[in-house]
Image 1 (tube, rainbow, N blue to C red):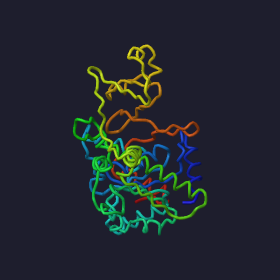
Image 2: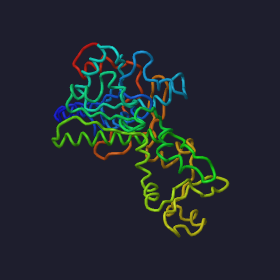
Image 3: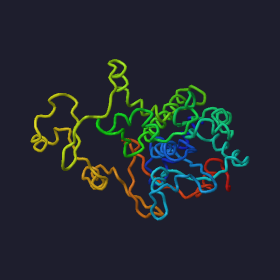
Image 4: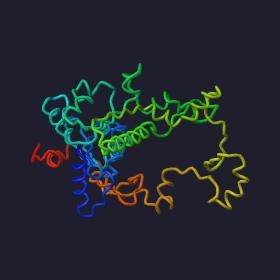
Length: 351
């Protein structure tokens, strides 16, 4: 879409009563992803003000709607990855709905998706198909191993990427088995890199460089990008980095970051001058939520959800001084926003 179109939409959103517009206000994003990496990428853009349309299957919607844990029959994973989105249900294997989807693409700035490479092409919705209807579209495509190479057709989730990308081999302790993290960090990293890629591609367009952009995000590569030092250690020294041989203390857990010799002098100084030391307790989630620092920063917000009641949400990250943004809506019901989407994006009064 032209920069003037985005600007006009941004002006409209900024003029809405009570609005705290984010820096991406006026941007239109279609979330075609499933499970976590693609949808979380779109959610990050939505947190920053983008108008995100979540495209779901007509029957049952996104599979993540049924992912445990559930509360009142609602997936808490789903609600965490689908806020600041509007929902429309389409059968992309059907000719009519596929045509409608392409009409939405023609009005969009960004499409996010995460599938095994080749899936979108078989639906007639690959990158070449999208750029035919929108020559300036940005497609953020997340896959396990990328669209080329011998593993391109392998399915992968975050845990696979942690293993293949080397993270599991350096996590845990030297005398234990390779250990996965407590959260699918590969999905989170890929979502963040995908959002960064989308913004970079849009900046390229803003500079007048025409053409569509495919942002290729491989789950394992986002892990490997953050493991560059272990890669360099092996390359230069031949030493294979492994998990830590640090011994943990008994009693209450704490984390210590010592990046140079002699940084700490004694444990007594940790207690007498805590602001000078890089040591911190390992907080459980309940203690984190109740932390006076977290409360003072307003990191965790509370919003009313029609199905869950009042729920806790993590606020917008990063924070912007001029365009702070806000969490504008909780996760939508399936196809709840069809009429509004068709009206706002296509000027139609009904679906």
